[in-house]
Length: 455
Image (cartoon, rainbow, N blue to C red):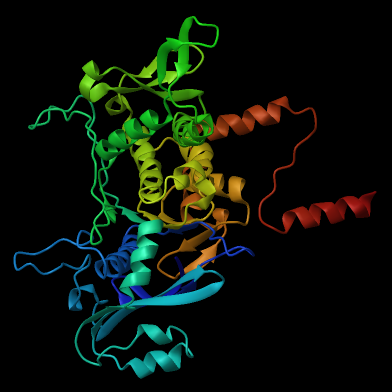
Protein backbone atom coordinates (compact mmCIF):
# COMPACT_ATOMS: atom_id res chain seq x y z
CA UNK A 1 0.00 0.00 0.00
CA UNK A 2 1.29 3.44 -0.93
CA UNK A 3 0.29 7.02 -0.22
CA UNK A 4 -0.86 8.46 -3.57
CA UNK A 5 -1.99 11.98 -2.68
CA UNK A 6 -3.04 14.14 0.25
CA UNK A 7 -4.50 17.51 1.09
CA UNK A 8 -3.92 19.53 4.27
CA UNK A 9 -5.59 22.82 5.20
CA UNK A 10 -5.17 25.04 8.27
CA UNK A 11 -3.10 22.57 10.28
CA UNK A 12 -0.37 24.28 12.28
CA UNK A 13 1.78 26.39 9.92
CA UNK A 14 0.29 24.71 6.83
CA UNK A 15 -2.29 26.96 5.16
CA UNK A 16 -3.21 24.84 2.16
CA UNK A 17 -1.44 22.18 0.15
CA UNK A 18 -2.54 19.40 -2.17
CA UNK A 19 0.19 16.99 -3.27
CA UNK A 20 0.32 13.95 -5.53
CA UNK A 21 3.36 11.84 -4.71
CA UNK A 22 5.68 10.56 -7.48
CA UNK A 23 5.80 7.05 -8.98
CA UNK A 24 7.64 5.68 -11.99
CA UNK A 25 6.07 4.14 -15.10
CA UNK A 26 5.97 0.71 -13.39
CA UNK A 27 4.15 2.17 -10.33
CA UNK A 28 7.21 1.94 -8.08
CA UNK A 29 7.34 4.85 -5.61
CA UNK A 30 9.97 7.54 -5.84
CA UNK A 31 11.56 8.69 -2.54
CA UNK A 32 10.18 12.02 -1.32
CA UNK A 33 12.31 14.38 0.79
CA UNK A 34 10.44 17.05 2.73
CA UNK A 35 12.43 20.24 3.34
CA UNK A 36 11.80 23.65 4.84
CA UNK A 37 12.81 25.91 7.67
CA UNK A 38 12.16 25.01 11.30
CA UNK A 39 8.48 25.54 12.00
CA UNK A 40 7.39 24.99 8.38
CA UNK A 41 5.34 21.85 9.16
CA UNK A 42 7.63 18.98 8.15
CA UNK A 43 7.17 16.96 11.35
CA UNK A 44 3.47 17.78 11.48
CA UNK A 45 3.02 16.36 7.98
CA UNK A 46 4.88 13.15 8.86
CA UNK A 47 2.85 12.79 12.07
CA UNK A 48 -0.36 12.92 10.02
CA UNK A 49 0.88 10.08 7.82
CA UNK A 50 1.85 8.07 10.93
CA UNK A 51 -1.57 8.74 12.47
CA UNK A 52 -3.15 7.15 9.41
CA UNK A 53 -0.94 4.05 9.86
CA UNK A 54 -2.10 3.69 13.45
CA UNK A 55 -5.79 4.10 12.62
CA UNK A 56 -5.57 1.55 9.83
CA UNK A 57 -3.69 -0.92 12.01
CA UNK A 58 -6.10 -0.54 14.94
CA UNK A 59 -8.82 -2.19 12.87
CA UNK A 60 -7.11 -5.55 13.11
CA UNK A 61 -4.36 -5.46 15.73
CA UNK A 62 -4.48 -4.79 19.47
CA UNK A 63 -0.82 -3.83 19.83
CA UNK A 64 -0.69 -1.01 17.26
CA UNK A 65 -2.04 1.76 19.52
CA UNK A 66 -1.45 2.47 23.19
CA UNK A 67 -4.29 2.09 25.68
CA UNK A 68 -5.38 4.78 28.16
CA UNK A 69 -6.42 4.16 31.77
CA UNK A 70 -10.00 3.41 30.69
CA UNK A 71 -8.91 0.66 28.30
CA UNK A 72 -9.65 2.73 25.20
CA UNK A 73 -7.22 2.90 22.31
CA UNK A 74 -5.36 6.19 21.94
CA UNK A 75 -4.93 8.01 18.66
CA UNK A 76 -1.34 8.74 17.65
CA UNK A 77 -2.25 12.43 17.24
CA UNK A 78 -4.61 14.33 19.46
CA UNK A 79 -7.40 16.06 17.57
CA UNK A 80 -9.01 19.42 18.14
CA UNK A 81 -8.61 23.18 17.88
CA UNK A 82 -5.05 22.98 19.21
CA UNK A 83 -3.98 21.60 15.81
CA UNK A 84 -5.68 24.33 13.75
CA UNK A 85 -3.88 27.31 12.30
CA UNK A 86 -4.30 30.45 14.39
CA UNK A 87 -7.69 32.18 14.09
CA UNK A 88 -9.00 29.60 11.62
CA UNK A 89 -12.43 27.99 12.23
CA UNK A 90 -11.37 24.56 10.96
CA UNK A 91 -8.46 22.37 9.95
CA UNK A 92 -8.31 19.05 8.12
CA UNK A 93 -6.09 16.50 6.40
CA UNK A 94 -7.23 13.87 3.89
CA UNK A 95 -5.10 11.06 2.43
CA UNK A 96 -5.64 8.65 -0.42
CA UNK A 97 -3.75 5.35 -0.08
CA UNK A 98 -3.70 2.79 -2.86
CA UNK A 99 -3.06 -0.95 -2.85
CA UNK A 100 -2.88 -3.13 -5.96
CA UNK A 101 -3.47 -6.89 -5.74
CA UNK A 102 -3.69 -9.10 -8.84
CA UNK A 103 -4.02 -6.04 -11.03
CA UNK A 104 -6.95 -4.59 -9.03
CA UNK A 105 -6.35 -1.21 -7.39
CA UNK A 106 -8.20 -0.42 -4.14
CA UNK A 107 -8.22 2.98 -2.43
CA UNK A 108 -8.18 3.47 1.33
CA UNK A 109 -8.83 6.89 2.84
CA UNK A 110 -7.95 8.72 6.05
CA UNK A 111 -9.04 12.03 7.44
CA UNK A 112 -8.51 14.18 10.52
CA UNK A 113 -10.84 17.13 10.87
CA UNK A 114 -11.46 19.73 13.58
CA UNK A 115 -13.73 22.75 13.85
CA UNK A 116 -16.58 23.67 11.55
CA UNK A 117 -16.57 22.95 7.80
CA UNK A 118 -19.21 21.48 5.52
CA UNK A 119 -17.82 18.51 3.53
CA UNK A 120 -19.53 19.84 0.40
CA UNK A 121 -16.95 22.65 0.37
CA UNK A 122 -14.22 20.05 -0.04
CA UNK A 123 -16.19 18.36 -2.81
CA UNK A 124 -16.42 21.62 -4.71
CA UNK A 125 -12.82 22.69 -4.13
CA UNK A 126 -11.15 19.41 -5.09
CA UNK A 127 -13.53 18.47 -7.91
CA UNK A 128 -14.41 14.96 -6.84
CA UNK A 129 -10.99 13.91 -5.54
CA UNK A 130 -10.70 12.22 -2.12
CA UNK A 131 -14.38 11.26 -2.42
CA UNK A 132 -14.10 8.50 0.16
CA UNK A 133 -12.20 10.63 2.64
CA UNK A 134 -14.38 13.44 3.95
CA UNK A 135 -17.63 11.94 5.22
CA UNK A 136 -17.47 14.02 8.40
CA UNK A 137 -20.04 15.95 10.45
CA UNK A 138 -20.01 19.68 9.79
CA UNK A 139 -19.36 20.50 13.45
CA UNK A 140 -16.83 19.03 15.86
CA UNK A 141 -13.81 16.78 15.53
CA UNK A 142 -13.54 13.66 13.42
CA UNK A 143 -11.07 10.93 12.54
CA UNK A 144 -11.71 8.25 9.95
CA UNK A 145 -10.12 5.48 7.90
CA UNK A 146 -11.69 3.14 5.37
CA UNK A 147 -12.92 0.07 7.25
CA UNK A 148 -11.76 -3.30 5.89
CA UNK A 149 -10.05 -5.16 8.70
CA UNK A 150 -9.35 -8.35 6.72
CA UNK A 151 -7.66 -6.59 3.78
CA UNK A 152 -5.85 -4.07 5.98
CA UNK A 153 -4.71 -6.88 8.28
CA UNK A 154 -3.09 -8.73 5.37
CA UNK A 155 -1.46 -5.56 4.06
CA UNK A 156 0.07 -4.64 7.42
CA UNK A 157 1.20 -8.23 8.01
CA UNK A 158 3.02 -8.47 4.69
CA UNK A 159 4.36 -4.94 4.24
CA UNK A 160 6.32 -2.36 6.26
CA UNK A 161 4.68 0.67 7.87
CA UNK A 162 6.76 2.58 10.36
CA UNK A 163 7.65 6.08 11.55
CA UNK A 164 11.15 6.83 12.86
CA UNK A 165 10.75 9.98 14.91
CA UNK A 166 13.26 12.81 15.28
CA UNK A 167 13.69 11.72 18.92
CA UNK A 168 15.13 8.30 18.04
CA UNK A 169 18.19 7.16 19.97
CA UNK A 170 20.19 4.06 20.82
CA UNK A 171 22.01 3.40 24.10
CA UNK A 172 25.84 3.67 23.79
CA UNK A 173 28.24 1.24 25.48
CA UNK A 174 29.48 3.89 27.94
CA UNK A 175 26.07 4.75 29.40
CA UNK A 176 25.63 3.52 32.98
CA UNK A 177 22.02 2.45 32.64
CA UNK A 178 20.07 2.23 35.94
CA UNK A 179 18.89 -1.22 34.90
CA UNK A 180 22.34 -2.36 33.83
CA UNK A 181 23.41 -3.33 30.33
CA UNK A 182 20.88 -5.48 28.53
CA UNK A 183 22.01 -8.90 27.39
CA UNK A 184 21.18 -10.06 23.91
CA UNK A 185 18.39 -12.60 24.19
CA UNK A 186 16.30 -14.58 21.78
CA UNK A 187 12.86 -13.10 21.43
CA UNK A 188 10.18 -15.38 20.13
CA UNK A 189 6.82 -13.91 19.30
CA UNK A 190 3.75 -16.05 19.21
CA UNK A 191 1.69 -15.56 16.09
CA UNK A 192 -1.67 -14.34 17.28
CA UNK A 193 -4.39 -13.08 14.96
CA UNK A 194 -4.70 -9.78 16.82
CA UNK A 195 -0.98 -9.01 17.28
CA UNK A 196 1.15 -7.26 14.65
CA UNK A 197 4.44 -7.25 16.63
CA UNK A 198 5.75 -4.41 14.46
CA UNK A 199 5.47 -1.08 16.33
CA UNK A 200 4.66 1.80 14.01
CA UNK A 201 6.28 4.52 16.13
CA UNK A 202 9.98 3.70 16.58
CA UNK A 203 12.47 5.54 18.78
CA UNK A 204 14.73 2.64 19.81
CA UNK A 205 15.13 -0.65 17.98
CA UNK A 206 18.71 -1.87 18.30
CA UNK A 207 18.04 -4.36 21.11
CA UNK A 208 15.38 -6.10 19.02
CA UNK A 209 17.63 -5.92 15.98
CA UNK A 210 20.45 -7.66 17.88
CA UNK A 211 18.18 -10.60 18.58
CA UNK A 212 17.07 -10.59 14.96
CA UNK A 213 20.68 -10.58 13.79
CA UNK A 214 21.50 -13.66 15.85
CA UNK A 215 18.47 -15.49 14.48
CA UNK A 216 19.48 -14.72 10.89
CA UNK A 217 23.08 -15.79 11.53
CA UNK A 218 21.96 -19.07 13.11
CA UNK A 219 19.62 -19.75 10.20
CA UNK A 220 22.57 -19.52 7.80
CA UNK A 221 25.00 -21.73 9.75
CA UNK A 222 25.84 -25.25 8.64
CA UNK A 223 25.83 -28.15 11.10
CA UNK A 224 28.63 -30.71 10.94
CA UNK A 225 29.03 -34.10 12.52
CA UNK A 226 32.02 -36.45 12.73
CA UNK A 227 30.74 -39.65 11.13
CA UNK A 228 31.73 -42.58 8.91
CA UNK A 229 32.31 -41.68 5.29
CA UNK A 230 32.07 -43.73 2.09
CA UNK A 231 35.55 -45.30 2.33
CA UNK A 232 34.91 -46.59 5.84
CA UNK A 233 36.86 -43.89 7.64
CA UNK A 234 35.66 -41.00 9.75
CA UNK A 235 35.23 -37.44 8.62
CA UNK A 236 33.18 -34.29 8.91
CA UNK A 237 29.96 -34.06 6.93
CA UNK A 238 26.85 -31.90 6.80
CA UNK A 239 24.01 -33.08 8.99
CA UNK A 240 21.63 -31.28 6.67
CA UNK A 241 21.99 -32.14 3.00
CA UNK A 242 19.70 -29.30 1.95
CA UNK A 243 22.53 -27.01 0.84
CA UNK A 244 20.21 -25.07 -1.47
CA UNK A 245 18.17 -23.95 1.53
CA UNK A 246 21.34 -22.93 3.38
CA UNK A 247 22.50 -20.78 0.46
CA UNK A 248 19.01 -19.31 0.29
CA UNK A 249 19.06 -18.33 3.96
CA UNK A 250 22.62 -17.08 3.63
CA UNK A 251 21.35 -14.36 1.30
CA UNK A 252 19.54 -12.71 4.21
CA UNK A 253 22.80 -12.54 6.14
CA UNK A 254 24.58 -11.13 3.08
CA UNK A 255 21.93 -8.42 2.78
CA UNK A 256 22.46 -7.43 6.40
CA UNK A 257 26.21 -7.23 5.79
CA UNK A 258 25.54 -5.08 2.71
CA UNK A 259 23.66 -2.61 4.91
CA UNK A 260 26.52 -2.68 7.43
CA UNK A 261 29.12 -1.95 4.73
CA UNK A 262 27.25 1.16 3.69
CA UNK A 263 26.91 2.32 7.29
CA UNK A 264 30.71 1.97 7.54
CA UNK A 265 31.27 4.14 4.49
CA UNK A 266 31.78 1.32 2.00
CA UNK A 267 34.37 -0.63 3.99
CA UNK A 268 34.40 -4.40 3.49
CA UNK A 269 33.03 -5.34 6.92
CA UNK A 270 30.68 -7.95 8.32
CA UNK A 271 28.81 -8.95 11.46
CA UNK A 272 30.57 -11.62 13.45
CA UNK A 273 29.02 -13.78 16.14
CA UNK A 274 31.07 -14.40 19.27
CA UNK A 275 30.53 -17.12 21.86
CA UNK A 276 27.75 -16.83 24.43
CA UNK A 277 30.21 -15.86 27.19
CA UNK A 278 30.32 -12.37 25.68
CA UNK A 279 26.69 -11.68 26.64
CA UNK A 280 25.63 -8.18 25.53
CA UNK A 281 28.63 -7.77 23.20
CA UNK A 282 28.08 -11.02 21.33
CA UNK A 283 27.86 -9.37 17.89
CA UNK A 284 30.92 -7.46 16.70
CA UNK A 285 31.89 -5.73 13.46
CA UNK A 286 35.11 -6.92 11.81
CA UNK A 287 37.07 -6.15 8.67
CA UNK A 288 36.65 -9.17 6.38
CA UNK A 289 40.24 -9.16 5.11
CA UNK A 290 42.39 -7.99 8.01
CA UNK A 291 40.11 -9.47 10.72
CA UNK A 292 40.49 -6.21 12.62
CA UNK A 293 37.67 -5.61 15.10
CA UNK A 294 36.17 -2.24 14.19
CA UNK A 295 33.42 -2.37 16.83
CA UNK A 296 33.58 -4.93 19.69
CA UNK A 297 29.79 -4.68 20.00
CA UNK A 298 26.94 -2.87 18.29
CA UNK A 299 26.78 -0.58 21.33
CA UNK A 300 30.25 0.69 20.33
CA UNK A 301 28.98 2.18 17.08
CA UNK A 302 28.85 5.95 16.82
CA UNK A 303 25.47 7.61 17.31
CA UNK A 304 25.08 8.18 13.58
CA UNK A 305 26.13 4.64 12.66
CA UNK A 306 23.86 3.13 15.28
CA UNK A 307 20.79 5.11 14.24
CA UNK A 308 21.35 4.46 10.55
CA UNK A 309 21.91 0.73 11.02
CA UNK A 310 18.88 0.47 13.29
CA UNK A 311 16.58 2.08 10.72
CA UNK A 312 17.41 -0.25 7.87
CA UNK A 313 17.67 -3.41 9.97
CA UNK A 314 14.21 -2.60 11.31
CA UNK A 315 12.85 -2.34 7.76
CA UNK A 316 14.39 -5.74 7.05
CA UNK A 317 13.08 -7.27 10.28
CA UNK A 318 9.54 -5.99 9.73
CA UNK A 319 9.53 -7.24 6.14
CA UNK A 320 10.40 -10.85 6.95
CA UNK A 321 8.30 -11.09 10.12
CA UNK A 322 5.69 -12.93 8.08
CA UNK A 323 7.75 -14.03 5.06
CA UNK A 324 11.44 -14.99 5.27
CA UNK A 325 11.88 -14.50 1.54
CA UNK A 326 11.55 -10.73 1.99
CA UNK A 327 14.92 -10.44 3.76
CA UNK A 328 16.47 -12.55 1.01
CA UNK A 329 15.08 -10.47 -1.87
CA UNK A 330 15.12 -6.82 -0.82
CA UNK A 331 13.42 -5.75 -4.04
CA UNK A 332 10.27 -7.58 -2.97
CA UNK A 333 9.80 -5.50 0.19
CA UNK A 334 6.90 -3.04 -0.02
CA UNK A 335 5.40 -0.47 2.30
CA UNK A 336 5.90 3.07 3.58
CA UNK A 337 8.79 4.24 5.77
CA UNK A 338 8.64 7.69 7.38
CA UNK A 339 11.84 9.19 8.82
CA UNK A 340 11.89 12.59 10.52
CA UNK A 341 15.22 14.41 10.24
CA UNK A 342 16.95 11.57 8.42
CA UNK A 343 20.17 13.61 8.39
CA UNK A 344 20.46 13.77 12.20
CA UNK A 345 23.92 12.82 13.55
CA UNK A 346 25.28 11.90 10.11
CA UNK A 347 28.60 13.03 8.59
CA UNK A 348 28.50 14.62 5.15
CA UNK A 349 30.08 11.52 3.53
CA UNK A 350 27.32 9.25 4.88
CA UNK A 351 24.70 11.78 3.78
CA UNK A 352 26.04 12.20 0.26
CA UNK A 353 27.32 8.72 -0.56
CA UNK A 354 25.91 6.01 1.68
CA UNK A 355 22.40 7.05 2.74
CA UNK A 356 21.09 7.33 -0.86
CA UNK A 357 22.59 3.88 -1.56
CA UNK A 358 20.78 2.42 1.46
CA UNK A 359 17.46 3.84 0.29
CA UNK A 360 18.09 2.43 -3.20
CA UNK A 361 18.35 -1.10 -1.74
CA UNK A 362 14.56 -1.02 -1.24
CA UNK A 363 13.08 0.13 -4.58
CA UNK A 364 9.49 -0.83 -3.71
CA UNK A 365 9.44 0.93 -0.33
CA UNK A 366 7.98 4.43 -0.35
CA UNK A 367 10.44 6.51 1.68
CA UNK A 368 9.04 9.83 2.88
CA UNK A 369 11.67 11.65 4.91
CA UNK A 370 12.45 15.13 6.18
CA UNK A 371 15.86 16.76 6.30
CA UNK A 372 17.81 20.03 6.46
CA UNK A 373 21.00 18.87 4.76
CA UNK A 374 21.80 20.11 1.22
CA UNK A 375 24.49 17.40 1.08
CA UNK A 376 21.86 14.65 1.39
CA UNK A 377 19.77 16.22 -1.38
CA UNK A 378 22.77 16.41 -3.71
CA UNK A 379 23.57 12.77 -2.90
CA UNK A 380 20.00 11.77 -3.71
CA UNK A 381 20.21 13.70 -6.98
CA UNK A 382 23.48 11.92 -7.83
CA UNK A 383 21.97 8.48 -7.12
CA UNK A 384 18.39 8.86 -8.36
CA UNK A 385 18.57 11.69 -10.87
CA UNK A 386 14.95 12.64 -11.54
CA UNK A 387 13.77 9.53 -9.68
CA UNK A 388 13.15 11.35 -6.42
CA UNK A 389 11.32 14.52 -5.40
CA UNK A 390 11.95 17.37 -2.97
CA UNK A 391 8.81 18.79 -1.35
CA UNK A 392 9.33 22.25 0.11
CA UNK A 393 7.22 23.26 3.08
CA UNK A 394 4.97 24.97 3.98
CA UNK A 395 3.94 25.71 0.36
CA UNK A 396 3.99 22.03 -0.64
CA UNK A 397 5.73 22.53 -4.00
CA UNK A 398 8.32 20.26 -5.63
CA UNK A 399 11.73 21.90 -6.21
CA UNK A 400 15.21 21.00 -7.47
CA UNK A 401 18.09 20.34 -5.08
CA UNK A 402 19.87 23.62 -5.77
CA UNK A 403 16.66 25.63 -5.35
CA UNK A 404 16.49 24.53 -1.73
CA UNK A 405 16.97 27.62 0.47
CA UNK A 406 19.44 25.86 2.77
CA UNK A 407 21.69 25.16 -0.23
CA UNK A 408 21.82 28.83 -1.20
CA UNK A 409 22.32 30.01 2.36
CA UNK A 410 25.02 27.41 3.07
CA UNK A 411 26.90 28.48 -0.06
CA UNK A 412 26.62 32.14 0.94
CA UNK A 413 28.03 31.40 4.40
CA UNK A 414 30.89 29.37 2.91
CA UNK A 415 31.69 32.04 0.33
CA UNK A 416 32.32 34.52 3.17
CA UNK A 417 35.03 32.37 4.73
CA UNK A 418 38.77 32.93 4.36
CA UNK A 419 39.17 29.37 3.03
CA UNK A 420 36.83 30.09 0.12
CA UNK A 421 38.77 33.28 -0.72
CA UNK A 422 42.07 31.39 -0.61
CA UNK A 423 40.68 28.64 -2.89
CA UNK A 424 39.62 31.24 -5.47
CA UNK A 425 43.07 32.86 -5.40
CA UNK A 426 44.73 29.43 -5.68
CA UNK A 427 42.71 28.55 -8.79
CA UNK A 428 43.51 31.91 -10.37
CA UNK A 429 47.24 31.56 -9.70
CA UNK A 430 47.34 28.02 -11.11
CA UNK A 431 45.69 29.00 -14.37
CA UNK A 432 47.89 29.85 -17.35
CA UNK A 433 45.03 31.65 -19.05
CA UNK A 434 43.73 35.11 -18.17
CA UNK A 435 40.55 35.04 -16.10
CA UNK A 436 37.81 37.65 -16.24
CA UNK A 437 35.45 37.87 -13.24
CA UNK A 438 32.00 39.28 -14.03
CA UNK A 439 28.90 40.21 -12.09
CA UNK A 440 25.26 39.75 -12.94
CA UNK A 441 23.59 37.80 -15.73
CA UNK A 442 24.12 40.34 -18.54
CA UNK A 443 27.86 41.18 -18.23
CA UNK A 444 28.87 37.93 -19.94
CA UNK A 445 26.62 38.68 -22.92
CA UNK A 446 28.08 42.22 -23.28
CA UNK A 447 31.67 40.99 -23.15
CA UNK A 448 31.08 38.18 -25.67
CA UNK A 449 29.34 40.61 -28.03
CA UNK A 450 32.21 43.08 -27.64
CA UNK A 451 34.74 40.39 -28.57
CA UNK A 452 32.80 39.56 -31.72
CA UNK A 453 32.60 43.23 -32.75
CA UNK A 454 36.33 43.90 -32.20
CA UNK A 455 37.59 40.77 -33.99
